[in-house]
Length: 595
Ligand SMILES: Cc1cc2nc3c(=O)[nH]c(=O)nc-3n(C[C@H](O)[C@H](O)[C@H](O)COP(=O)(O)OP(=O)(O)OC[C@H]3O[C@@H](n4cnc5c(N)ncnc54)[C@H](O)[C@@H]3O)c2cc1C
Image 1 (spheres, rainbow, N blue to C red):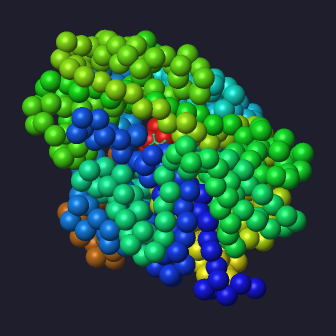
Image 2 (cartoon, rainbow, N blue to C red):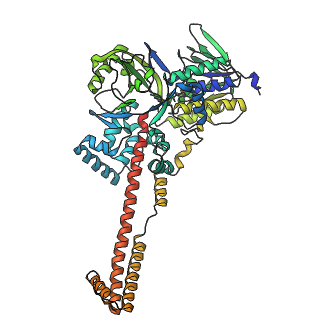
Image 3 (cartoon, rainbow, N blue to C red):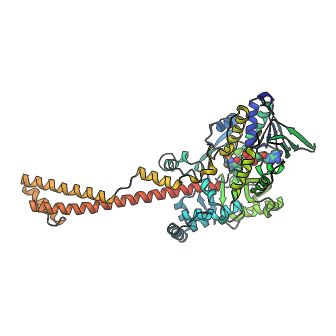
């Protein structure tokens, strides 16, 4: 075994995962070598600069439950880490809708006719749901009805993923909203809505000059602590002997190819690319790697000659008549992203696939298209757009299609056999994650190298806890857990027992009251009591009358008690259903964040 001082760790990729790993290694005096293919660090979370305007590739909210990650962000950014309010709305057919969607706002906003159709469609799908929820379309329709699905889910989801919702797996939605544990659901409703569900946060942190500011500083720290970060150095080959990686080949800056040897290798490059560049590699593993799919996106950045355009950080564009999917307003993320206070800078996001028509459109045409769509939507006049540029982000999203799990299993099993190699991060693990997840996998990989720990990086879930998600199918459905807890908190009242107790209590009451009057012999009281006979047929202040009164009272009490219990059960059921539906709808919109 190599001693710590003899370790030479090579890190592939200078995005959040790779840089976090290198930062930790440098702090352990292990002088890591980072190989990054781009001309800047940050990966998908880099910040581009055009004429002094800073452009975030998608808008990166900083939010985490992981203390180690938060500490690192605070440590590096200090006062440059801003707390920002969040506003994002959905734009559909000329109107804005709250995000997360609020049913009442949506129904009113769409007009009475649509609202009725949405409700009828909801009722229909509650009564006749799809028997099996195989696709995303089935999944959403069963919960919210076909019409709401078509208005608020179909167009946007298809813009983002480029495939019909009828081909997107239901598990993708289920996984994204699996936070719907009873605990978070109840807390979100009754206690602290903000803390419970991460997608609903109304504030987030943000580096003053975008996420690239963080990653540039991390790069400086790595270099200060003895590490090296080589930009423009794509890894083109990885050589293996048996179960060990010997070296990688990086090509760089016209210097030809460089062989970089190491004792340990940590990679955050897309795992499919890693396999394709690895030699030798078994055919089934290569085949699995070839089947992993990605979705890409490009951002058209426009500089608009207006100091303020709209208050949102970003707007989701659901309208099917334009191709733009989301619009970022960078000034609302941080004023310092825009060097000229009289201007606003926007990022129009187009989701696409490398090589398709959008991806291949020349930049000047894309700027023209974005300018026109901005006017079409009504957010600005095209004549107010004074400049623009385009940035392309390949492999922005790992796709969860029908074959990805099986392919990933094959790859995971093979890579598990390599003793000096670990794959980390979003595309390294083919995980649709946020920066903090990537960072945690980087930190754990370093612990495995430095302390010989056996952290399983594939098992870090989106909550940054270990969980065998691949085997999570057997888990109790969240809906059932929710229903069980509601039932525990508000136990069902049995109408028969409740009716019996009300009936018995009533008849005992009338018996005791009549007995009192008979013994007391008070005439006035008895004449008032006699009025009761109008409600209780046969009742009188007499021994015979009291028996009939008790019988009447029992019947009334029973009817009233059982009806009350029934109504109360119905109210609890209906409220629980509405609460559950609302939470599920809000959680489902986590899908729109498309982080
Ligand atoms: C539109 C969008 C919005 C997002 N919003 C948020 C958000 O609000 N909050 C949040 O926390 N996260 C957000 N994310 C997710 C976040 O960007 C990722 O989780 C994070 O960037 C992943 O970091 P990573 O290091 O794992 O991967 P990457 O960022 O992909 O980094 C991998 C690096 O490896 C390099 N590389 C690839 N191949 C090679 C090679 N052959 N040789 C050398 N280097 C190579 C790449 O150039 C890249 O720099 C968003 C993502 C997108 C697409």
